[in-house]
Image (cartoon, rainbow, N blue to C red):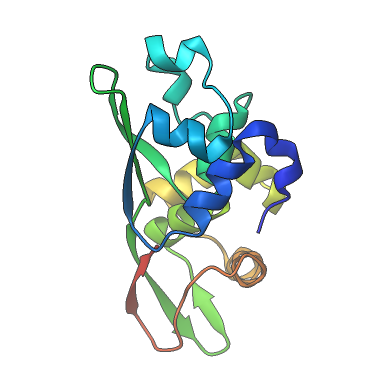
Length: 171
């Protein structure tokens, strides 16, 4: 769980979303204001930019993204916002004591962490282009990098299985 102190007034939204078992949640502006115990800014009511899934510089986006959600629908006329948990299909192949990480699993881990490719690269000590090439399938991580990815995944409580080539759906 993330440190919610940095979310300021959107901490309530974070807690509401984290506490939900639903994969999709539709809220109107009044419900959101009750949840955050305050008023949404004028920009939330007038334009879609406020609701973008930005990684940086938006405490409101940090709240729903840290809770594992993305805004997928914005209806300013009906004043409703739809939040959804992203789902990625991926497989990990176990080879001995290691896992082989492919493009889908690298991307799913990065999304699970809620970081950009550049942030993932800094975390792993590689270039952003390397993460991009892993995710696009240009090449796969080396065994050493795969082991590092596995350690990061374990610490982040990323779901991956015990058996070989098991398909997983990342909640």
